[in-house]
Image 1: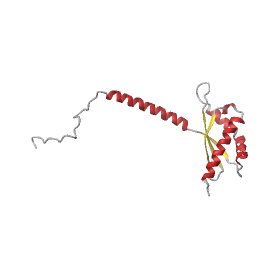
Image 2: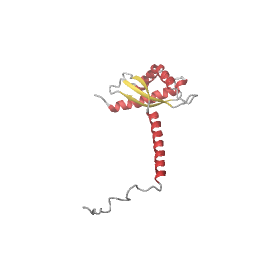
Image 3: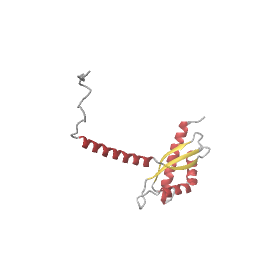
Image 4: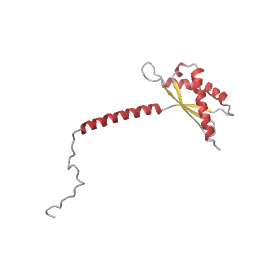
Length: 149
């Protein structure tokens, strides 16, 4: 039987251990600006997916995601041994690192919202002093019968 609460606790602990190890123990310069955002553990506690984002910028204002991915792949064994020592579970879960798409999607949504605000402001500016095309309120006054009816 799957214990979801235990899986959540283990995922939280794995996030803490991996983040601490990346900050203090793994001496790879490509990992200096890597942030662990989330960890998901399967119900059988055998596999852990660690989501990360690269918040640092390189010289040409583009994050070095390929370098960070390569550095995490090379440090997976060390990080898994740290997780095993820090959690005390019988079987240390395998670690899979996946780049988190949430920051990029949030940035894209902010850009879309900014464009929408600009469009709404333009529409409001055009609507100042505008009048309806037909009668001001065609539905409130009862219609008169035509003479030929």
